[in-house]
Image (cartoon, rainbow, N blue to C red; front, side, top):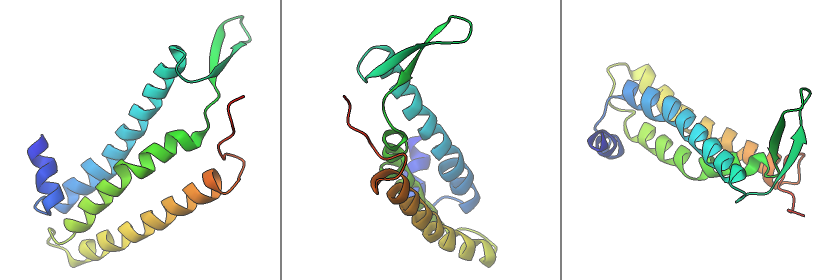
Amino acid sequence: MFGYFKRAWRGEARLWSVFWLLVVLGNMVAFKVVLYLEAVAVHHGILPSVQYIGKRGVPFLVPLYTPSEVFGFEFITYLPCSLICLRRNAKNTKTPLFESWARQSVGIITVLAALLFSLLFVGGGAMSPQPYF
């Protein structure tokens, strides 16, 4: 397993496997792991939360953290690593069109992630971090 990641980091893996396993599936798994860890932290009182009573009288916790903490961790850690692997393995395909597409998609995904992160989470938008009171 770690041999695959080493090969992908060095640029020795096939492009299709890097795209589907590391970029698509890997980012989904990383996002789910961060959400799960934050839910556990809310459940154990590490992160602040508010308890509400649902429609049927069932209490549930609503975390007071913002989406920037969820998306920010994934944007800063796993996404750049997976995009570097995609860029390094772009040459490992038989179709020149896929090589060009892989190189261009790295730039497009980077710009979109930076815009999303800066506009929604850092720039004072509706989802920007609020202080915990």
